[in-house]
Length: 116
Image 1 (cartoon, rainbow, N blue to C red):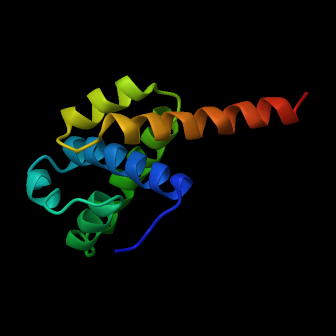
Image 2: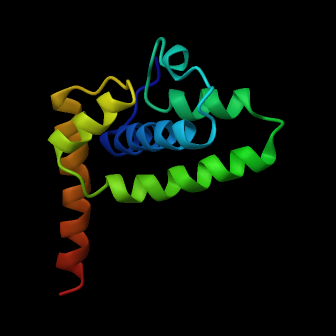
Image 3: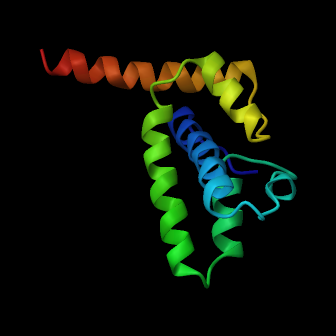
């Protein structure tokens, strides 16, 4: 099994949450529950892109919306991330959500400290 750093795992999980939202918007017939079988960080994005390799226009719409969603999710609290993930059926533990929220909070604080 591939091991990811906290930063990598945080980005992959947020990408999956955002991708699930974009999929629900642009491809509501896609079997998201089936896609979540054997879930690992990055699985939703990779599996959906593999399933839609031939439809460039749909891929572009979904990935554009998902990329915007990732940016938005980076400012959410751990509890908010859990609620959002659950609304799309993604498994997200409190520990993982806390780790993700802390990672992005540290990044924002590092930028603010650097700019002083």
